[in-house]
Image (cartoon, rainbow, N blue to C red; front, side, top):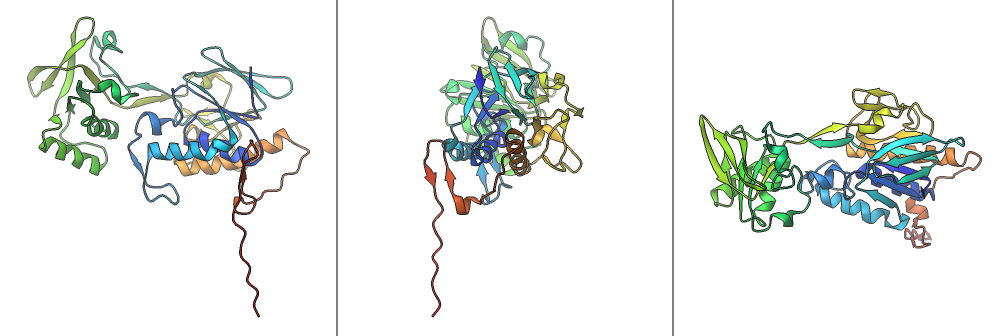
Length: 350
C-alpha cells in the first residue's frame, strides 16, 4: 500500500506542478500515470513541439517544459506509479480513498487530484483490415524510443504536428523516411510544414500526397505497405509503418467513479477550489469543466495552486496556514535543503 497526502492521477504538466504547490505546504504527493514516463501528451505525443503561452518563456519545447517541471519538483521527492492506469476507487470511513490500478497497485490518500488531461488515450487507427495483426511487429501508433528506428526504412502517415515533427526528427535516425498524407495541405505548424518541404527538396524525406496507406504487406512481420494515390496502388517496402492520426481521449474507468460528468469532462466548483461532487476528490487541468473553462496549461497551473490550498485545509482543518511568497520564504525541500531568495539590500538615506 502506497500512502501519501495527495494522490495525483495524471503526470502531465498540471499534475507535476501540483507537486510543487503541495510541497510548499509540506504535503507529499504520489502520481499515477498510464504512460511509461512523466509529461503526459507533452512527452508522449509532441516533445519537440514549441509552446508559446508559458509565462516567462517566449518559446519552449514541450519536452523541455516537462524537464523543467521535473527539476522544479525534485526537492519534494514525489513518488510515481507509471505504466499503470487508475482503475477503481474505494472511499474509506475516515473520508480518505484507496485507488487501485489495473495492475493491482494500491494507493491510500486523504486527497485525490485528477489531473488526467483529456483522459486516457487510445490511438486512432486507420481502417486497414489486417493492421491489428502487425501491431508491435512493425506497426506502431506512438513513438516511444526513436532508437528503435535507427537505420530502418520508416513510413509515417498523417498530416498533423505529430506526423510532421517525427518525420523531421527521424531523418537523422532512420535510413529513410516517407511521409504519406491524404491531402496536399497539412494542418500542423507552418514552420514544421516548411521544414518538411526543405527536407523533401534535399532528398531526406519522400513525400507522397494526396495518398493513403490502404494495406499491410508481410507474414509474421511487416515488410511493406500498399499506398493508394489517385487510382493507382503501389507497394512500398519498409521496416516500420507509423500511422499518427492522433489519440482519442477517454475518461476510462474514472467515468465510473460516481463523479458528475459533462461532455467527457469532470464538473467542478470553480468558485472556490475545483472540487468535484465527491468531497476530497478534485479535478484540475483539461480533465475538468466549468463555466468559462479554457484548456490551457497555464490555467491548469492556476487550478492546481488553489486546489492545494483547499487540500491543506481539508487535511489540517484546525491548523492555520500563513501563505508566504517564495521570494520571501524560499523553497525548502523535504530533505531540509533550501533555496533562499537573496535578502534585499537596504541603503540608508543621509
